Length: 279
Image (cartoon, rainbow, N blue to C red):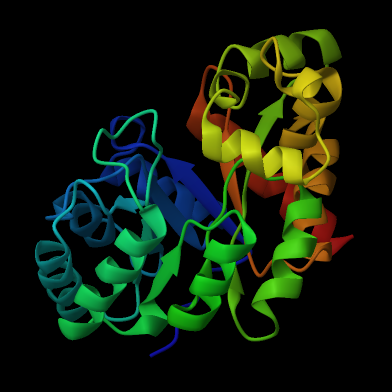
């Protein structure tokens, strides 16, 4: 059974989402709700979100290979698939060396983790990898359904598609902030991810591969970098910038909302994107 991820996905952490919000996002037109920030291996909250909705896909962005036991994750996948067939996508990733003391040989660890999932009967077509660099993107291409990168501009999507090729899922996430005031928008962005995440090695290295400089990465991000990572402005402008990922080869665009009311931001973005598509 294939997954219908929709054009738009909403990225939220567990404390930012609840079953009522999931139902509201489904009504707003989101195809997928991405549960962020290393959810536990039992994936109970994923099941609660699916219970509250009828067609929404829930994905993990991402299950962390250092903290979530693969055998437990596989059992959770089978439990969820039996209850909600065709509505769960398992995203996995290696996290960041700044967070995990176990962080050694991340590529080998991810390969081993995918091996364990496969041995436990988790289909490769229901797994995606949080891949940024070419090596991880090739692994995503060869071993899973595709990639779910974040902190990336459309240029990364274009390059990632050239590596993944045709037929693999490319599901980038992009920050969105409905704020017409340019100075205020940049200040908000710098006080939250992406500004606060630029010191993370994996993100910094990926952005430097995209020709951003150390100066761009310093002081919570240059204007050029912040503008590349955050779709900000009025709703129509935000929608246009998000849809640039689709034009660059994405199958689906995940929205990381910024602002005081995350669900309101997501609703506004969905309305603007659907209006842009209709136009």
